[in-house]
Image 1 (cartoon, rainbow, N blue to C red):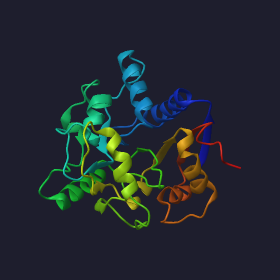
Image 2 (cartoon, rainbow, N blue to C red):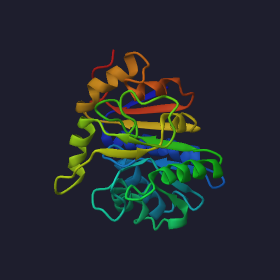
Image 3 (cartoon, one colour):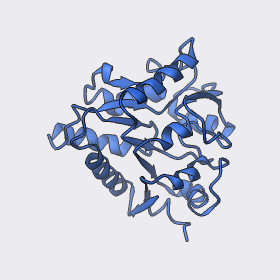
Length: 241
């Protein structure tokens, strides 16, 4: 794992965007896995600006959603797909047939998992996976003690995840389950971008980087990935030795 520490959120997002652009360049229909949430939002803002200024060409890119709340999909304000529509897909007019995303409101969630894994195989793997980090160390919705061998699956949410998730909704939501790429699916990505910012993430970052590599802290497993890049601002890195 390579660790890149910057002064603030904007600089962190800029450096992460630069690397993603370099990794995706000149690839034929590369698959990029996109996470929702506050941490990667700056990357998507940069994508939109660079495309509009004709500094970045994403015409070949294929998009894969990382996760979704069970019971919700893009029609629901506050869902993972809703936020990515707002921040990325709609501003860039991304064709729907290039977006592969869990439908958390589907009657057949197992089929949604199968379709996601099939999409990864069809595109010969994930070129770049963009991830954020939960306060409990989760990546995607792979909660503490998720098996390292897990692929796309439905999971019971940690109470902390359900609590923190309320910030994305205008009214309280019952969040009990998620549907997510598994840890094994993510570890097979050719490149992983983990972006973590803010003082509130400093304690879990210390555990991820300096603690044991364990399923109890899923993000710690990324330390074994040969091409994982951890982008931190000074606040998130403040407790590291």
